[in-house]
Length: 359
Image (cartoon, rainbow, N blue to C red; front, side, top):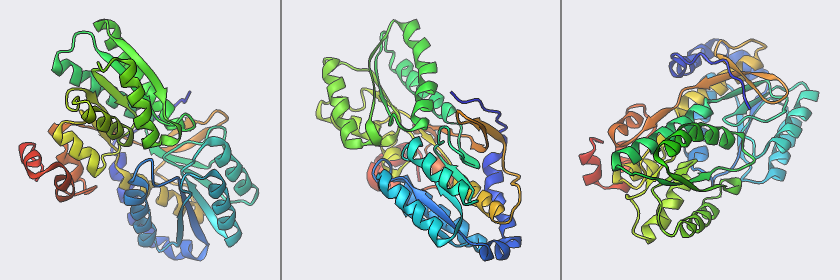
């Protein structure tokens, strides 16, 4: 679906360092208007409010650039209303995390007619008119999720694994790429082991409550016998874990995730999740902010390291590298400053943290 030319070496460091150049351009940028940022919701993952908002706020503050950051709270109509209001107030750049491609494309096309460039943040708008795309290699995210599940099943010595795919929203292109990635790893393993994919279902709007209901139906279909849940993020993974707990199966079934939230990392340490994926959101936020400042100043960005085909055109992209997380390396997320051991251990318990070297 997407064709990428990616040079990822030291991208996280580059994106973080990009903000050092803001001091020389901030005065000009501040005089040229503000940047509008539209986040998607606060329910599918707490990252949008707990991580992305503060990181973006800090990045623009460091740049001396005014940013209006709002959340559409899962409402496509609200998304478009927020965008219209930002354009009316004089936004010179729009950064957006789409709820679906159709509604985001309408915003991008309107912005383009007004000479306002747009940046797709984290999620690609298919057939859109975005100027840039800032995200992670999302197929690689899925590959890491699938690899973690396979490694967990191997460690448990499962002979003929019974697996379900609990996928993200069908309207989110990232969910499609995650699925592509983990299927590419799990399918050959299943064939080699004579296993079974019991169910393969998407969860509308990344709704964790609905995800729990869908997984409960999957578990019933499987007769209560499952070996792995390949879930597209921690919200869905933890929804599955809640169901597994009710049935005395948590810790016995391999469950994947992504986002490295405090609750997700705690579940890794307690064994309820087998693996997750860490995406350096600070670097992602810094990259988007740096691009926005470059656009405000009419300059090209040195951060672009690839292109992503959106179905219509190849979009200049900043693509960062995800990291697989298991019990063995939870400390990586802490050392990167994304969260603290205290926050994780308040959920997981001191014993789980001590046993896994999270201090």
